[in-house]
Image (cartoon, rainbow, N blue to C red; front, side):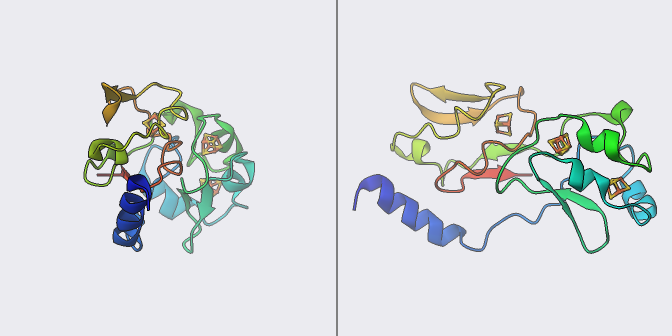
Length: 159
Ligand code: SF4
Ligand code: SF4
Ligand code: SF4
């Protein structure tokens, strides 16, 4: 087994049940309480308008973002579609979380060359030091596009 594969399988078993259950909202809300009070009387237009299908409607009929297959393009469509002004353009902001790389799980922090997260980051927010040891800088918009490409699930939401 190659070194990269060995490291990947070790980390994969460590990570098996560690998918984050953090509730990320679409980046256009004013008050968290609006979701609870106003999301019961719509047809979930935010979710159906999202072209990258990252908005999931939960049991309480409120939306959350799911980065497991894609990331947010900040396209504004969900904000325009919301009929109750829970999401609205004037509240646009970065997604309310911090994205970070766990050095213990990252291949590149463990002497295995890997640039998987670099290309999807259009904001150039992932900086490598001499081709290793990537860190996420302040240009990160928490868009989530780097999450699914990491072979060892080393990129963390809300960490
Ligand atoms: S469309 Fe607006 S009111 Fe309906 S679930 Fe989405 S955020 Fe809530
Ligand atoms: S801004 Fe666009 S990509 Fe992001 S959640 Fe809303 S509809 Fe989806
Ligand atoms: S979440 Fe941050 S680091 Fe990851 S692709 Fe988006 S801007 Fe880049």
